[in-house]
Image: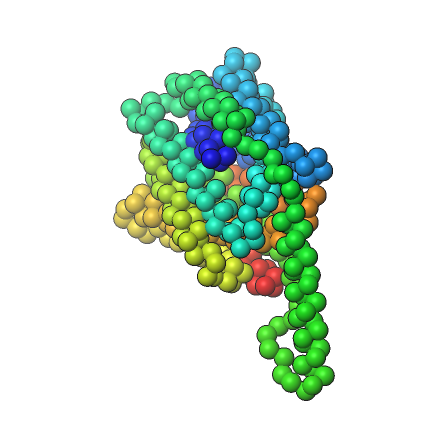
Length: 404
């Protein structure tokens, strides 16, 4: 039940995820594709130290609920401020968005810790999958709201305030529900226990390998400790490639050769979100029966292939809308599986007190890609930029092979 507030929170941000870049570009503010990139990258770069701070402070104080409430309440306030006349200036709008993003990430590290501490290690993938599946359904409903609000072919600017009032209200509902439903864990020990178990297992394998070598017996398998460095680099590269691809995507769908109406753009993103929901369901069912590291590699390789496939779809397929939708469904599915495996491994590798490091690494890649994506799209064109994103996914695949 404590996850219910996050569900309504994601409805708001699912709607905003497509609305905000379109609003910045098509409204009287007169923003450009580069402005979208600057806004997204500034928000993520400023969120990097904030993520580390929120992760550190919540573990230091052992209080998690207060930072989740701060995130939801501040989102409600800033989204409402977007409707005020002075916020219709492009620079002011970007500054407000950056402020909202810095406060918004306050709930990420506490949420990860709550799941890790409420469940044993064997149930982490299943628990993260349930949480992410639930919130992805919320994100999906946010896109559905966007689809229906723009279905009468209304312009983005004509109903902007209605969209923002709705999202502010949804954040307030998330805040109220979290006040009553979320409670801090009484004891904080599961992550430390997992860390101790990993060290004991590594020591045991070392002794076993040494014994077999001394006895002249063959050594089975490989003996090495997981490399956090290659794990972190792979995480940054995957986030970089995802932002390269997705940041300019709403604008790409709105211009020739596709020229989708706003409602259809929401529909396409609904397909992507629906694929993610299915992915969370699958990973929740099969988490205990799969090799997390190998599956993670395959998923990253699949993302690379799918991004490159989208380029072919737009160029050579007679029905690019339907084909692009199918590719986005598969991209959503792949991301869901990757994210659950990656976040579970991160909670093993990242010690208590440094929980925000996961969001920091994601933020570094995301911030860089959020600027480079729109910039490269404007300078080189969208399709070369998508090919670059696919190539970065491929590099991430090879780095993660080194990790495991």
